[in-house]
Amino acid sequence: MAEVHTSTMLDDSSFDVDKLTYEIFSILENKFLFGGYDDPKLSKDSHQVSIQEQLKPARQFNGGKVRILSIDGGGATDGILAAKSLTHLESCLRRKSGNPDASISDYFDVVAGSGSGGILAALLFTRGKNGRPMFTAEEALNFLVRINKKTNRAQGFFGKILGSAKAEKVFAKTFGELTLKDTIKSALITCYDLSTHAPFLFSRADALEMDGYDFKMSDVCLATSADPTMVRAVDMRSVDKRTKIVAIDGGIAMNNPTAAAITHVLNNKQEFPLCNGVENLLVVSLGNGESDFGVQNQSSTPARFVRIAGEGASDTVDQAVSMAFGPCRTSNYVRIQANGIIAKRHGIVEKSKKSNKKADLLAMTVEMLAQKNVESVLFEGKKIVESTNHDKLETFSGELIKEQERRKTSILPPVVLKQNSPSPRTSSATSLSTSSSY
Image (cartoon, rainbow, N blue to C red; front, side, top):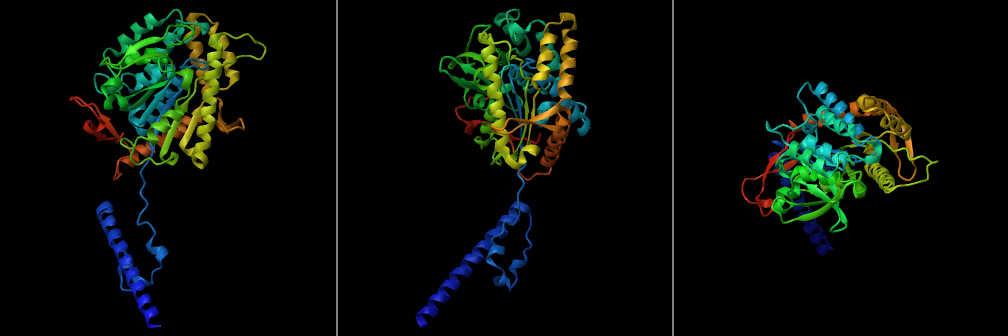
């Protein structure tokens, strides 16, 4: 019996030491992370407190949310619907924040785009001469409308009239010598590399990591919008000439880049150290309308097949992402897309005279935003909800502003963006960084 009693005493002593160690570390954690500590468990009767009570976390830390903007390529409107959605969102942000100069880039940490969506991403997130974005959402919309007026539906986004040579001049004039390093926030723009037979992501983070992945923004826009059925592939090199790719339209392999953007954030702990899952994300995904392929019209051209594949892939990504968000889908993820009924109307717009085309396009996008929002359910199709696309953007703008305000009082920033360093870089360890409070 004596041996048993001694063993029990040793076990009790060990438990007291473990308990004391836990309490010491709890004090240190609270003192240095939260600025103080006042725990009743330090009283003489602390041994009477249950183990479960002691093991409760001292405080739940709110790491905030990383805000992602994803913009599809192609679609029935060749980028016009997404651009119009962005003008409405920017208007909401300005009105609700009280800042008349607020821009889309102020309220997003990451932008991803394919095709015309990649061009919008470049216009809205590339730094201008004054340090602010080169384009407002309204200016970006007008840019796309001007291009769209010069083409017809059969010619694609740049098509035969605005072919690769003319597109090259347009982008060179717009972006000059600016590169991926000159984007304001984390940017991902897609293309398909024929030399490796794989999708390729132009990435700001990669450009800052290695000069061999830094490309001129004019080349990036040319690559992501190079429709292989209309223009030749784009032979391009990085700024230091070390990396060469043969690029075609990003919509070929990644028309909806939402999943790529989410993967980038969740696997990039250097820039997004506190993001551990979809519950730490706010995602706005913008579509560009669904094409009206028509059941009666069975004849198909290469361009038609490309568009069918791209739009089908976009829907699949939307459904998978919706399911991944689970119970927080309605609060953390919104998808803006128009249905096929509007696509028929777009065919009528395409046949209108050039003098009326701009007004008709803008009127059509207003109609699209007034549609009831459609949510995807994996392998169960889609369901129409009561809120319109317009309402969804209005509501989500409030969530973006709420996150902005939360960061002003946050202990730790959810985003730590790498910055362009004037000295040569060989790894991310030599790059400067800054905490994002945007």
